[in-house]
Length: 249
Length: 316
Image (cartoon, rainbow over all chains, first blue to last red; front, side):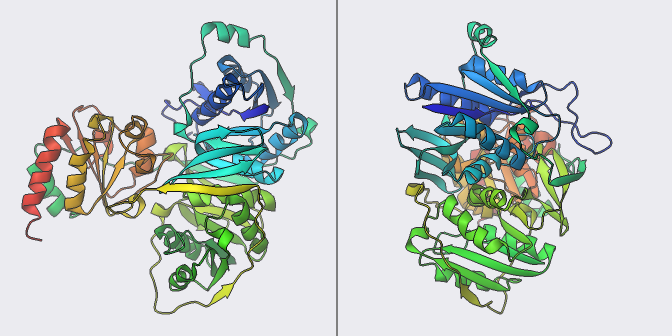
């Protein structure tokens, strides 16, 4: 069985982002970039399926500028078999990414596609669902557990009230939540080996996909700052403040 | 303009999230039709019909829709979407699950998690865990939108009830089906609806220790939440999680106990009206946004707070 995982290059989750002075976006120059944490979970899940003998081939796909190859290399060092890089210097909205993935899937024919449930940069939480819709495949979003069979998959999903389990026919799309697994770190020998694994490069034009953005970002600004920092000496003082100053209890 | 709002409910009653979405639709302007999809859920439709601002309620009922899959919900909404300029749903796990499918099948963008309506085609939404706010404009003929509940007031029941019409339920796709659910039975208010929340983090050290938070919560009529660290450590289940990828809350009072204040957690609660932090590390980032901070051992401070509340609130 073949699994395709989608991996996005984003600003590292530990970086405190800065809004550009001209309010056109967020500063990305000289900022540490990493694989989107939810996508690491997607890669890890695919590798565990391979280690369990259920999957034979893992293809990692990333889209964006040349540096996305580093993100694919990370997936290869973790244990993916090969990579596909869709080169584009334009902003790729979730709908465009879903269409590009659909075009790749038409050639690769995986039985399962695993994506992170959301990217921590635009916080959209759309791509997996859009891809499933375009392919007319079933989906299992926000997965915290996967039981993969030959023809179907049982997916436990994290929903607001607790957990929900669904069964989907393969081929299907799954998006990962935090508690699906804990991604491994790539070992040095595996990082060296990953350098020899193949990465195929293509473009939106070659795939015949229109990637023109549908949304115009008019402005990116800083959120209102909270004025915090008042420290109190005792719980008595705290309760008094909550009752009489803030009047919230 | 015409808005279609997809109601979130459990076949018995309407979830509070729906009322916030109706307010967002009111800010956009025009008619507001509310779609209720489920099984034996006319009571939900009747409740929805009373919400101020609702023009009419569309009710799609079928036994197979009791736990409607994203596939079937999207197909139903898609069939109706052409009659509307805006289709809105809450940015909860319910709305997030099927709305992007609708957008993709209409070949339009989705505008996720809006926090303000600037104009009928222009919206604000938080990005980077709320550390930046993007103002985005959509030129698509139909705008597919999920709404951040905490950013919009709850639409209240009005004096009049809107008419209820039946909508056709499509054939089930058969590619996906519901197997089961473990929905937590809460003894306390739901996190996203609570006026007061007390949350614990890694500093709680164990799930057992959450009892001291529950005692305070019961005195205040509060909900109990947690940081990702506490959920990942197995102290409490996933539905407790407040943060960028958990629940987004904005209560009147948020008490953060043993939570250092990672940006991912702050993303889920920094719009709370009043924030209290209790932490032994006086350098913890949570204190930078807390209105009131107490530095010290939570295992002494929380029971002391509990006792003080018992004393002060006794006469009310």
